[in-house]
Image (tube, rainbow, N blue to C red; front, side, top):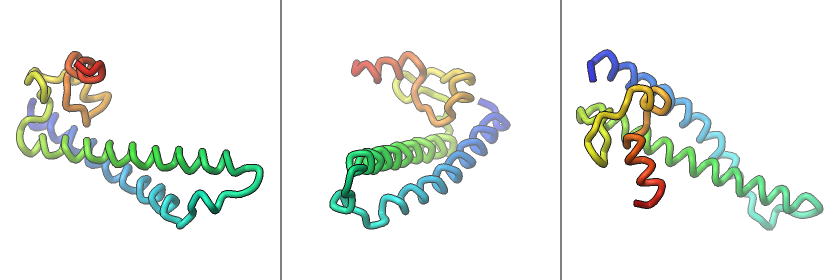
Length: 116
């Protein structure tokens, strides 16, 4: 992968990370507002609890994505970005364009998702 393309992906990943960290801080602040399940009372308790659960799930997804982005940035520094971590083949540019934080080519990702 050429230097210009690596710089493009680095900028994109850094932009995604800054944006994600900002959004995550907002979600974390909401989750850490000190509310517990005991705070939810009344007829909307179930809906409020479900919202709290969804917010916690979203926050966890954001943390995992931030980790993947940081890992991709590390791989750029190490010179291994764009290579599948499982098989070593080059990850197609179209896949990196769609999701710059990926570390597996599509066949290896499918195997991983299938548990094989």
